[in-house]
Length: 112
Image (cartoon, rainbow, N blue to C red):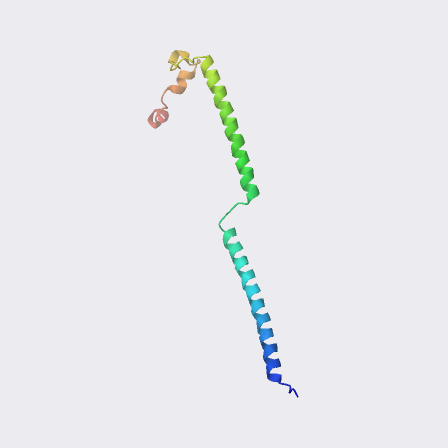
C-alpha cells in the first residue's frame, strides 16, 4: 500500500513556482536592459540607416556636380586667357567720386 506524502508534492509545487518566478525576473531584467541600452544609444546621436543612405546619396550627387563644374571651368579656362586685372586710377573714377576718397573733416574743422 502506498502512503500519500505531501512533502514531495509541496516541494514540487514550490520549485515549480520558484522556476516561474525566476523566469519572470529574467524576462523583466532583459526588458529593462534593452530599455536602458536604447536610452543610452539614443543619447549618442546615432543616425538611422535610412538617414545615412540619404546623406550618402546627397554627397555622391554633390561630388558629381562638383566634377561637372570643374570640367566646365577647365574647358572655359582653356578657351580664353584672362587678362590680368589693372588697378583703377583716379581717372577711372566717376565724376564726384574723388570727394568720397578725401579724408573726413576733423571736429576742429567742423566746429570752426
